[in-house]
Image (tube, rainbow, N blue to C red; front, side):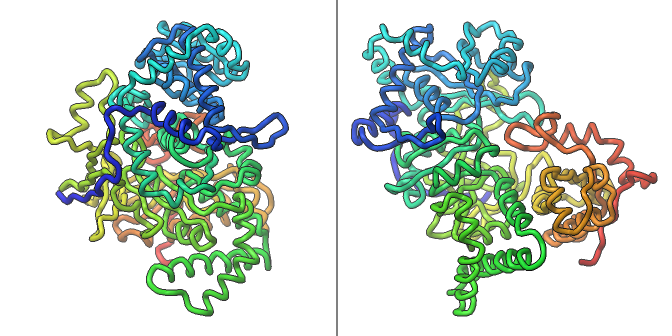
Length: 608
């Protein structure tokens, strides 16, 4: 077993909690802007540390008046917003435990999460989600509050609660107290409740500020959260910014993201690779055709070449001149579309790919690819600004140990690793080795410098009829980078060769057709159109270059049904429910291998 580690830069403090750390900031710099929120006119208004502390205290008093006791679970089911963060910190200030619920959760999922965690008070976005929560019929929930109706009545109800009561509850919290229960995505079976403590968050926050200060701890540091705060990654950044550094803003999702980026001007962002793929593909489509498209592709090539050259040597004078010209003509416009001040982005959740990593760094936005899980409170490894290896997820986060087991599984130890699954001692015991290593279920490798690369999921390994072990993630991630492709599921377990199910991105299809001089068509028509199939064939060829011939995609089928959260094939964190896809499309997969006429798939051309 190979082991690597990075020493902690800040020692854990057993007496410290999330609200206590924020109180230190509020006392040290009460007038410093901590958050910005939009007013009715859409303008960003600063919120100082002192103002936010006052609002948190007032809302925490309202929670106490509503009967919330220390240790009680309070759920939040809403889009990413200032109110979400305010509620989160008020729940902690009252000594309670926040339980995030994705807005897309069904009544059945709400019932499981809230019943399993024992939620006593529920906050939801609006009347629709309030009705869905009541439909879940959770016996422990005493009341459901719609955030859209305002939180003023709750604040008013808490006016008679003494400030000292909130101060006492906050003072009683310790690092090993439960901060939140976050339920896993549930790609297989029912979601498990991951119990994360205040210490889990603070271990990462304090070491993160010490190690990534250039990114998040400068006087000008600003980030705009648009990922769901029900996700551990966004939650970690929320705690990092509010308690320690930077200015935090919120955007409810991708619908208003373009406008919000332009007006907020973040200096760093966090996102999943799909967002970076969309930015690139959309920019290419907006270039249109002819000279403008050729100019975009030239500038993209220059950016990638310039970034690669910087890894090994100083770019040549000719390349520097080309890069400067591309910056004036194209790259500057892309940076302006992202707010104009963006320097760093943190990517996680899936491999980003070297092409995109070099492209964004080449236009002036350094993407720090990282790796983590809900069970590790988000980051376990991350690239550092001073030494990036594009294509890896970086070295171990400070205070973290990473090991690669004999079978290739990634094992993790550190102060950020969760304390256990709620109400599931057997599952908790199974997740850890006797000496405290957590089984991530992911496969990876470590290079000579201790940089981690993710190669796949242990449970997703495909074993072909010929006995070849294939990790589908490498092929799926590369093929999904094509602008036409929405989702990919690689198949081939106990089959003679590797195949793939591909879905079309309905949003990107019209623009792609226009750039190719093709008429408008539906997804159903595109799935069988020769030019579309040929483009996907070429994309599969490019994906195959990353693997051996035995691992390469030999046939693919284009589905007319996309995999989405709405139809249940994607989790809220945008992971494909592979088992469900394999079950529901079993006939399509069978035809792919049997060659029974229509639906028997498209052969991938063997020569590029």
